[in-house]
Length: 309
Image (cartoon, rainbow, N blue to C red; front, side, top):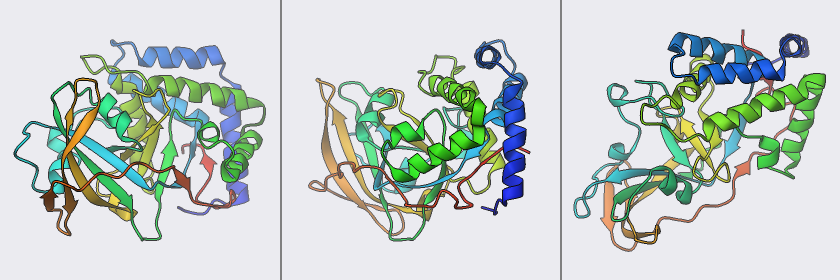
């Protein structure tokens, strides 16, 4: 991430607050409502995305999590996947619009907790599914992330780094801090809505995330709230091939959904160096650990709020 000098930061602060001062909460709410009307064109949704993003800029954070998980429906209880590639993001030509990606622009969706995955995948009793476990590697790297629809201070309450960043936001937005928080609240509502059959619910969030992915080459992942848990857990949409920057896929499990909504593991596999899956019956998927955020200086140039150019 390029360095942001004080002069540029002050200019960003001035531009952002001038924009926020000229719009009311009612007008902000109307923008979100218009974006969710099914007859609103995609081009208009993109215009609204651009306008809203100009009011809030972005906050890029290096985030470290011990484990991530990815679940996929698997149709056969006896024939297991042979390679990790079968369980990662689809090819562009097979990629549909989803919560954080537009059509033909895949992202690797993972979660910080298996419970969130199982609920959001809408598995039924008797269904077979795979779960891949990604572990923090020994590389001295982090995923550069932004949080959308999540109040990071609330999510990491008591963390001194987040306290400093929260204070930085208050100073950056000044009298407009409540408008900024209002926009974040509206974004949260968008990300925790369950999809309708026509897929219209995803139009806003997919284009909002595409705005960030296409504009920020240093962005590795977007953190957003879990729908099924109403934000108690978080999910990530990771740019293709970027998880290996800081993580390794080490284990895969095959599970069956039980009558009570629970699940049991049928088999486990270690992931080989070429992605091959070496199956056995005793290998268990590890339980999640608490999220971690690298201890950083809030003046670190990789952490900043800036308006869109």
